[in-house]
Image (cartoon, rainbow, N blue to C red; front, side, top):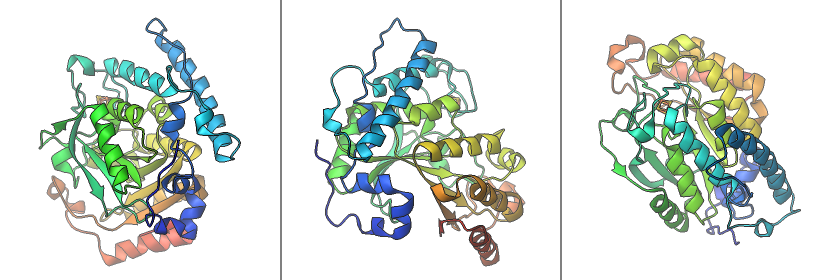
Length: 362
Ligand code: SF4
C-alpha cells in the first residue's frame, strides 16, 4: 500500500510543538505511517453469529493488545502494513458488531439511555437507526496543523449545551441528510485526493453515529488520519471501540465541576467522565484539548480544567484556549453567559495556562 500525501500540505506540521506532541498524526498526514483504522482492518478476528456478547468483548480486549503491539512495530519500522493479512474478519469488523449490539440497548455514551435504536427508539441524542449528516466539507478554519480538514457534521448530540453554536444541528432544528457508510467512505476518499489532511468526525456529537463511522472506515481505502471531535462523554466500552479506530482526539473540556455542566449542558457526572476519557485518550492516541472560555466561568471552570490537564496529561496534549464564545440558542436564559468574554477574562485564562507550563495555542 502507498500512503499518499499532497505536496505543500505539510508546512504547519513542521512547527517544533507539533512535531513533539503529534509525531504519529504528522507522519500519517505526510504518508509515512498508516492510520490506526488501516491497521485494525488487518488484525484478524475469528467470530460468528453464535459467539456471545461477553466473549466478543473479551476477544476485543485481546485484539486491542495485538493492535497496539502491531502499531508499535510498524511505527518502529520493524513491520510493513502490507505484511498483514486482509480478506477475513478483522478487529474493525468486531468493533462494528459490538457497536451494533450496544445500540440494541444503547449505552454508547454515559447517558446510558437503554433504548433499542434499531427498533426506532430514541434516547437523549434523538439519533435513531439511520446515519444523518448536516454537511461535509473541507474546513479551513480548524487548528493550522488540522486544516484543511474533511469535516463531517453529524446530526444530534448527547449534550444539550444551552449556548450551543451548532444548535441547528445538535438539537435537530434541521432534518439532516441520510448517508450510508459506504458512500461516506467514497466521499472521504475524494476529499483526501483534494488535499484533506484528515477526516474530522463532529456534530453535534459523533458518538451516537459511531456505527456508520466505523462502517465508513471499513470501506475507506484512503490512508487518512481519523479525528474524533467530541464532548468526551463516551462510556469506557465506547472508548475501547475508538482505540484502534481514531488517530487524534479533538476533545472539548468545558467545565471544571458537575454543577456548571448540569446547569449549562444537562449532563451528570461530567468531570469524572470527561477526565477519565481524556486519560484513556492520551494513553492510546494523540490529543488536542479545546477549552472554550465561558464568561464568568474562569474560577469555576477554566482554572480547574487547566489544573487537571497540567496534573495529568500535560506533556501528552496540546491545549487550544478558545475565545470565540458568543451567546447562542438559549444562552439568553442564563444571565452569566448572555455576553461575550472580556479581554481581561481571556488574559486571565492565558496567564493561568502559562503559569502551569501547558503546551497551548490560542
Ligand atoms: S448515544 Fe444517544 S441513545 Fe445512546 S446512550 Fe447516548 S444519548 Fe442515549
